Amino acid sequence: MVRLEQITKVYSLGGVDVRAVDGVTLGIAQGEFVALVGPSGCGKTTLLNLMAGIDRPTSGEVWLDGERLDRLSDDRLTRLRRTRVGIVYQFFNLLPTLNAWENVAMPLLLDGLQASEIETRVARQLERVGLTHRARHWPHELSGGEQQRVAIARAIVAEPRVVLADEPTGNLDSVAGGAALELLQGLNREHRQTIILATHSQEAALRAGRIVRLRDGKIERSGSA
Ligand SMILES: Nc1ncnc2c1ncn2[C@@H]1O[C@H](COP(=O)(O)OP(=O)(O)OP(=O)(O)O)[C@@H](O)[C@H]1O
Ligand SMILES: [Mg+2]
Image (cartoon, rainbow, N blue to C red; front, top):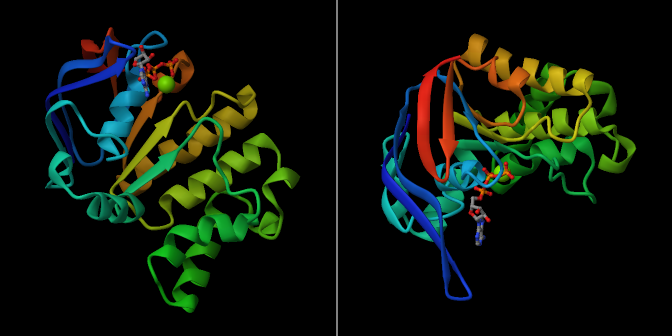
């Protein structure tokens, strides 16, 4: 589902090169749940951004769902991100001027789906994350845990093949964090959705089927959780 071939990402800042990702080769199969772990700055977010087509590698190939991302135009990448990848962030990234329903509907609205189809899909996802009763609430009227569940509903509403989550529990207490992880784990178990989770949390990593440990932009170890 995801294949990285000899990926390197170098950021140049004021004449200094930072090798955020340094020669990573990694394959993730359809239906896998993989945790990316390692110390702060080891390249977890950079790697997720490369897999999502948010960022381009300095060298190497990025394959997602049979398409080579590092060669796609910006327009094609934008569309692919909207339809084939779901992303969940540490700070939820909900649009503050849209209510929960509208936030979840946004990827489908941008994709031009019919109103009735949007209604059905958004209702299904809000129900899945247990927030049907919060549909008309604004993000600031929701708890952190509820905001993250809205963000998960938004990430999966377009039924993407892959869900990428960057520290999704980083701003949640253990109960809300556990609920967010349960949802991701349920998607993986019940829908064979491919999940790639970057995390500092040992508890979160242990829910994955495989743990990939990074250090200084390189894979240090990769094995079952
Ligand atoms: N846009 C950027 N410009 C310059 N350097 C960057 C940029 N983004 C990341 N880096 C550098 O690349 C390295 C990897 O960063 P990255 O954010 O991927 O780490 P991380 O593993 O996600 O860390 P954390 O656990 O703190 O989130 C770090 O040294 C960071 O400073
Ligand atoms: Mg990070």
